[in-house]
Length: 134
Length: 134
DNA sequence: CTGAAACTGTTATGTTATAACAAATAATAA
DNA sequence: TTATTATTTGTTATAACATAACAGTTTCAG
Ligand SMILES: [Zn+2]
Ligand SMILES: [Zn+2]
Ligand SMILES: [Zn+2]
Ligand SMILES: [Zn+2]
Image (cartoon, rainbow over all chains, first blue to last red; front, side, top):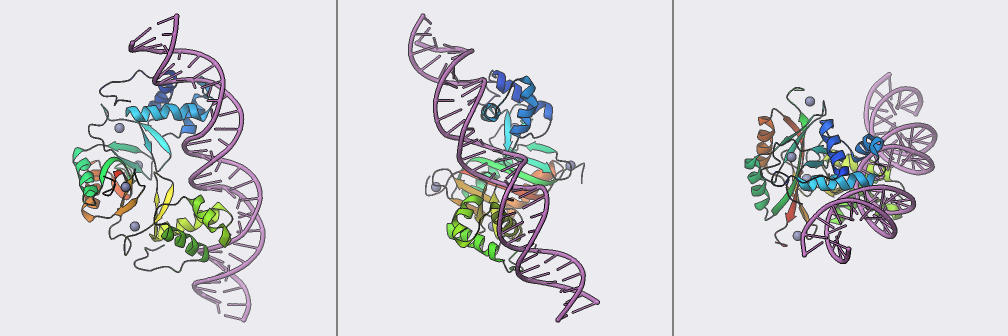
């Protein structure tokens, strides 16, 4: 399961459908919302969506927002350069944006390292007001 | 709903029982695990636990771990000084630790601010290896 | 072709969280 | 005190999110 900037994988039928739904949405979708949108295209069961989502997340083409139980297409042009990504979630308009920043990545490692912890993966979700809503 | 270092609230019966369960656990518990532990003490329904947890989290006495759908007692001596807290979650032994750091707090604000976002609340959960397991 | 690996479809079930309503309790103020 | 208000509680039912288990199909390297 490589990262797609290096080897954009050939998606299977279900994976393509789910990815298309995420890209069209332009915002986070729950697995069940995706399922409802794809019933007309033949999907019938949650597992069909969850399995596709697992792969897409593994490829780095989509992200899971833990605090929302939802998924969003990766908007970073070539996937993430580092491994750490943060999301901003506007509490007014619901807009979700993705931030990837090498300096922040190292700050995060340093923070954890100071506590003797070796970070492999992170979930950073920030709530507040986006520029338009502030 | 003030923060408890300033005004330690008098907890209600259910809130006290749930808080006691969290403190005893010394690690994250799901709402349903708490419920099972407190059935012998008279609790019967998930809502009784969720309602207590909502209050405890509001008071700053407990935290919700979004990535685990679980709750943990706040171990910070007097609650958090700043508003931002990070958790480290060891993928080997399951240990969860709480980090509160003013510098990181400001770095997080700066990161978001650079994208025109005004952060009010954050979820930071870091996965990897704790010192003992590394 | 053939076998291994990945993907798919399906049913059933497990887990997490909230809606809606009624009753009891506690805090406040006249 | 007593009426008023707000909070907490109890209960049933249901919604929302996620995975187990099994069988069948497709893909593709050797
Ligand atoms: Zn991304
Ligand atoms: Zn907004
Ligand atoms: Zn804390
Ligand atoms: Zn460990």
